[in-house]
Image 1: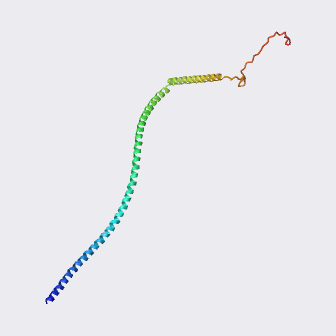
Image 2: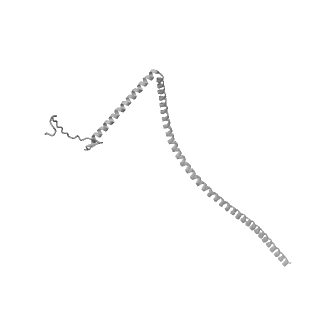
Length: 197
């Protein structure tokens, strides 16, 4: 009995150890399955995260490309703005000069309109009109005199040039003889014949 009891106890101990080991093995298997499930889940998450990272990198590259393009456009626009600012500054200076010129022209127009009004008032008066006609005739005559004097002066200059050039030693010029020949004139009384000497 003792042996039986020992054997039983041994069997119970062994069974208990196997039971405990089996339970530990089951727990370990359960933990292993859970760990494998977690590893599988983590692998899936890792794959998903790698896909997400790849997608994000692609988007980042696209965004960087777009950023460089936008930066180039921004540089172009900034250059255009600086050119336009310079142009605007020069136009502002031109505008100021034009305003000053316009004011000067307005003053001239006002002066010319006043002069026109005065001339119209003079023309509507008969005595003023006669005086104006006489004055115009005097001015016309003075202009004609000046023109005639100028023509005479020019002709005199032309004559001086012609005289200075001379006929260059030729006997004829323009078909006319300029050489004066010597002519001997013998005077004889009428009763003397020509044959006698």
